[in-house]
Every structure is written in structure tokens, then in C-alpha cells.
Image (cartoon, rainbow, N blue to C red):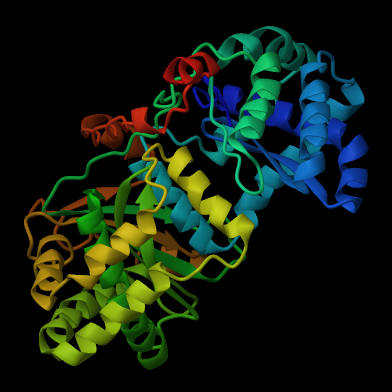
Length: 449
């Protein structure tokens, strides 16, 4: 990753960084297609922190492809107007497709907007895209980008030696010179909003596409930043709740075709339990009520669960966490996740599995009572209700239960930013100690001998 300072500082900086990535991809296509015929693959992606470069293939020729890619990216100073016009038009179409996407994607986007300190809307991106000129992009490439690369994070995994890995790093750093090589540098911190404990936060909005008859509910029960032991309990709770939620909310009550539950991650390490229902029959208010009833009843199932049944579920979670990687790419993705999220715990799933093995039913019930149960003073519940046109005309304007008593905070589009400014943020993740991972320099190695 080229960690670029300010790449997410404004909608315009996000757009212009993305356009630079797309221009590079277009230019690299001249030879990356031919390289793919020889099983050498390359692609670029845009992230919150900057630009990611992925290269894979046979190790004996990988450095040749890397050198060619870095050389082309470094030689880029001007952009043809025709290419920029085409990329802007393509980007605009991609952004506009958001408004006709499924309601569940709108609910997930709205939840991110509420929980993330900075989350640019599609409307803001479209407005910024209209202002981008060729001069803006070329100035960014020639002047802004070289001074904004704060650090470079690199993963080399596979049939390579440590010396070859350092050679790959040299190829990149000789062209893109970072201001620091500190592995713990946070460039564009993903800060997360803290909700009021013991209350419900409700964000309501109308479905963007009036022709879509589906409404959607997303519920996030925030737990917060967690160590591996607490992450293990959440993993087990997520496993325990998945099948009953689907069976009760979809199969029995037939609330909607799409019923989903999973672990939600905001920022790098703020986790919670997510439940989502999309329905063309029921409005989000009714869906929210049924989720509350389900969560209340599920506690009884936990309490009444036999030790044998509980242990069976523990063993299933452990087996999933310890499942062998299917290929090198899957293994690399896990290692890269540890790097991109800055915790550098490369065998995280195995360590979580070890904690899961030692869990007792009482541990799960205590966790459930603290973070999931409606009566808990520690629970943080976020509900996003997306109303289809037919439901917006009937139930959207109804006052939710708990507003008058202060137990529920109702938010609409106009009050979202002021609400976020009024709330504290979760603390940043502590810098990981990577001193033990540093390879000795050649001089240090000679001294040791």
C-alpha cells in the first residue's frame, strides 16, 4: 500500500486519488494483459489510506513485472484529456448505480455514515467529480502525490527469500520515496462514533429508488474495541444466533426473503453483532419489533441449551477458525488484513480459536446480558430503517417507542452531522509493537558475525 496523507480528507481528494489509480490501471493494461497470459497478474485498488498494488504469479519473473509496473507509474506525468473524460464518465455511472442498488446496501451505507467520523456520501462524490479538471489531476500527479506518500506497507508471501523480499521493497521505495517507513503510522485514521450506552439510536431514511418496493432494517449491536478473548465470545454468539435468526425470522415469520446476521466491523477494530432484513411486505418498524422479540427469546434458548449442544457449537466454531487455507491467495489475504488493520497479529484466528475452546456457557450469557439484552445499561443499539415508498407514506412519520423517555434517539438526514459532532469517538487502536519483526541490516548482520 502507498499510504497517502489526505487521500480521504475531502470528497475531492478521494475522487482525485481514485482517478489517479484508474489512469495507472489503464496505462498498465498495455502489458498486464499479456503478462496474465503467462500467469503473472497485476491490479490496483483505491483504499481509504491510499492505493494498493497487488502482483502475483511465478516467482522467477515476478520482479520483472514489478519493475515494469513501478517504472510506468513513476513515468506518469501527463494524462490525455480523452482518457480523463472517459474515466470520469465511467466513474459517474458507477456512483449513480448506487441509487438503484438494493435497499440493504443503502442501509449498510447509512450505518457506516452514522458510525464513521468521516464517510463521504455519493452525492458529495458526484458533486466533486463535476469539478475535476485535467489540470487538477496532473498537478496532483506531479506535485501533491510525491510529497504525500507517508509510508509504504508491503507483504511478500510465497516462494521467496527475505533478500528477494527486500529487493522488491527497494524497487518500490526507489521510485515512491516515503517520508517515513514507520510501520505504525496511521495516515487516514478511521475513527468511529461512540453511541450513548443504554439507549437506542434510530436512523430513518427513504429508499432512494421509488420503484423498489423493498424496505430494509439493519440493526448493529455495538460491542466496541475488543481483545482476542472478547472477540472469541462474539464469534461464538454470532455462530449460535445465525441459524435460529434465519429459521425464526425468515422461515417461520416470513418477514422477508433476505435475513442475514454476521459480525460487523467499523473502522479497524470496533466490532458488533449485525442483523439485517429486507422485505417488500413489512415496514422497518415492524421488522425492528420482531428483531427485539427474537433477541429476547434467544436468551432463553441460551440458558436452556444443554452442555452437549453448547460444546458442539464450540467445536464447530473452532473447526471453522482453524480450517486450512484453500490456496496461497486466501492465506495472503489473512496476513494482509493483519497489516492493513495495523494489529500485526498474523495468526489471529488460531489465537481466537484457542480462546473459544475454553469458553463456558456462563461466559456467553454474561456477554449477551451486557451487550445484546435490551435491559442492559451497557448496550449500544443502532437501527437503520430504510422505507420503501408504500411504507414511507404510512409508518415512517410515526414516533418510535422510547423517544419521549429519552431511551431512543431518532435521527433523520438533516440531523446526522450535528449528532455525530455531539458524540465522543472511540480511542485509536494502540500502536502495535513490531520491533521483534524487524530484519537486521547487512551491517548489523556483519557485526553479529
